[in-house]
Amino acid sequence: MDNVCSSLVHVISARIQSKTEGVLRIDQYEKALGFAQRQVLKLTNEHPNLRPCYTEQGKWDHQGDSWTNWCDGFPAGMMWLFYEMTQDASWKNKAIDYSKLIIGREYDRDVHDLGFLFWSSWKRWFDLLGDYEAKEVVLQAGRTQALRFQESGRYLASFIGKNSTFIDIMMNVGIIFYAAAEDGDQDLQNIALQHCMTTRRYLVRGDGSTAHEGIFSDAGEFLREGTHQGWRSDSSWARGQAWAIYGFGTAYSFTHDERFLATAEQCADFYLERTPGHGIPPNDWDEPSPANLHESSAAAIAAGGFWRLARLTQSHSKIDSYKEIAFRIMDTLTGKGFLAIDDPNWDGILLHGTYHENNGLGVNESVMWGEYFFVETLSEMLKELRSS
Image (cartoon, rainbow, N blue to C red; front, side, top):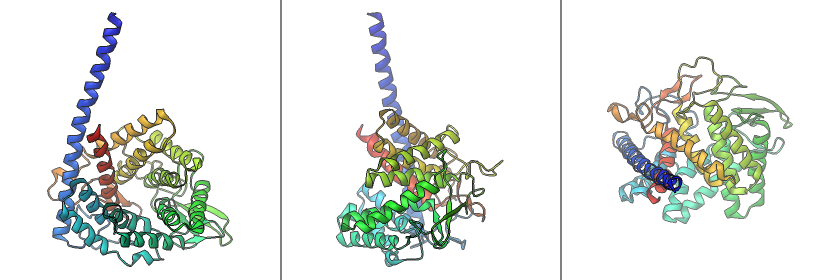
C-alpha cells in the first residue's frame, strides 16, 4: 500500500512539475514573440519596403551583397504569422503589402529559391484568407521552379549553373509537390520526386551528414561534392544539415515515401550526435577551432524540422525525443545570449547567425531566414502549449 501511495505521489508531482514548466515556457515564448513583432515593426517603420538578408553590426540597412535576394518573402511571412497569432488587421495589411513586393518573381528562372520566396508569403496569404489569386501565384512559382530540372542527372539545378545542385533546394521542392497535387500534373510530381531521390543518393552521406553542393557532368554523372558556405567540400555545414532535416520531412509529408522519412531521421540523428546539449551548432561541425561557436539560424531551422518530425515519425519513442530537442533549442534561442531583447541598438531578433562565413557576409549577425524560421516554430509551439 505504501508503495502504491508513493508511486501515486510521484506521478502527481511529475504532472505538477510538467504543468509548471509548460506555464513558464509559454511565458518565455510569448515574450520572445512579442519582441519579434516589435523588431519587425521597427524594420517597417524605419526602412519601409526593405527586405534585407542579414545585419551588419546589428543593422539591417547596409549595402552588403545579398546574392539572389532569396530572403525577400520572409518579412511578409513573419507578418502573416503575426496576423494568424494576433488577428490584428494591421499585420494582415502589412503582410499583403510586403507580399506584393515580390510579385513577378513567380516567373523568375534565375534562382532556385522560389519556395523560400512564395511558400512563406503567398502560400500563407492563401491559407489564411482563401484568396485564390494568391494560390495561383504559388502554383506558378512551383511550375517555374520545376523548369530548373536537369533530365540527364535528375535534379533541380542551383543558381550556380546547370551542373550544380544544392541541399538548400530540398526546402524549395515542396512548392513543386504542391503545384503537382493542385494541378494534377504527374510530370511535376515526377520532377520533384526525382530531385529528392538524387539529393538523397548524392548529398546525404552514409553517416547522415550532408554535402552542401553536388557537381555533375553534362551527361548527368555525379562528379564530386562541393561547398560555398561550409568549411570544405567534405565537411558538415550545419545549415545544410538543418535544410535536410526539414526538407526531407516536407518531401515525406507530400509523398508518404518511407525513404524520405528515414533520410530525415538519419539527418536528425547526425545533428543530435554532433551538437552540444543546448542544441545550437557551429557553422560547420568539422571546422577546427571555429571562431564562432554558434549558428543560431541553423538551430532555428532544425527546431522546426524536429517539431515536424515529431508529427511525421512512426516511432512513438521518437515523438517525445524530437519534441524535447525542439523545445531545448527554442528554450536556448529565447533565452539570454541569443535573443537580442537586451540590446536596444540591435535591429534583428536573433543573435549569432551566420550567412556566408567564407565571404565574411553576415557573420555573427541576425539573418532573415533565421528570424522567419524562429518565428514560425515559436508560433507552432505556442499553439500546442496553449491547448495542452
